Image (tube, rainbow, N blue to C red; front, side):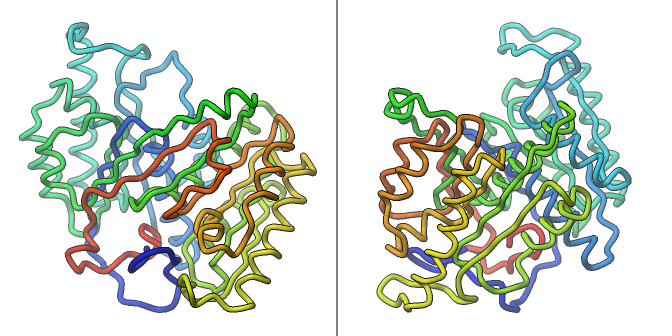
Amino acid sequence: MTRAGIGIRTAQVRPERMIGQIHVYDGAGKGKSQAALGVVLRSIGLGISLSWQTRVLLLRFLKGPGRTYDEDAAIEALQRGFPHLIDQVRTGRAEFFNAEEITRFDRLEAQRGWDIAKGAIASGLYSVVVLDELNPVLNLGLLPIEEVTHALKQKPEQLEIITTGRGAPQPLLDVADLHSEMKPHFHPHAIDQGIEGIEIYTGAGKGKSTSALGKALQAIGRGIGQDKSHRVLIMQWLKGGSGYTEDAAIAALQQSYPSLVDHQRCGRDAIVWRGQQQELDYVEAERGWEIARTAIASGFYKTIILDELNPTVDLELLPEEPIVQSFLRKPKGTEIIITGRCKTPPAYFDLASIHSEMVCHKHYAEKGIDLKRGVDF
């Protein structure tokens, strides 16, 4: 989170909320389910580090057997790494359909999933419940929206509920505490250059770093499914202190997959504001880029996450051109995930094959509600 302009809130001690919130991720851009899985990983990692009993339900609507989805590999990595902490239920048919193609089976499957969700929400057994693709289920009229919103409002106080998917209807948005829209941007120049595997997550809304964590899980799970080692590097700028819950999430990954995840960070444990940059900020930013540049060129990693690179460049702590040239020469099989908000899009945005802007429509922090370690930071 930032107060104004560009700057990363530090991990220094602050008040934390205890009451769970209702999160809605929608929009046509990529990153909705990934962000939900990132929150799941953060929550599990924090629970492990603090000896909490964290349990998660992933209830996936409109994703029946017979079709492979991007997040399948990430969920497999979660279940293998934390087998006693993750429950998954899938409902619906495998193919896409519109309102004119709804069948009795679709309604029965949606109701079956919702019955499970109601029981899970009321049980108090879970700390996080992800209702993946609930938004289009409601938009298609497969469930009575009044019943759903009433149940969500009656949830246990500490429970976090996350809904994802396009087309979240207004009654759901009305009860949500957070609404982040993933807005897609297209860069024809990336196609002209023949570049694939560069993804950018930016904007003021929630879901950027959490989407990147979801991509790390996906890479690890994809390697498991192919019986290969898909190594991941997570490089973080402007986060030189300690106490970020990404640390707990990454530590949990390293505990379960010790030979697959490397983590480096740079920067001071302080917010860097434009016009107040210190010499150490430039030194640390360059140190981080040298690590990232070498990793990209090596071809050693299948996925490289450059967390908060965007504000680092926007603050002019790093020049754009060396980054552009490094991306142009990256190995074909290496995926690069870039996160962070920025006022002026750097030149490397034109190289992105996927670019999602997280647009913040509603955030509980605007009401003075404290952020929660493991979910918000």
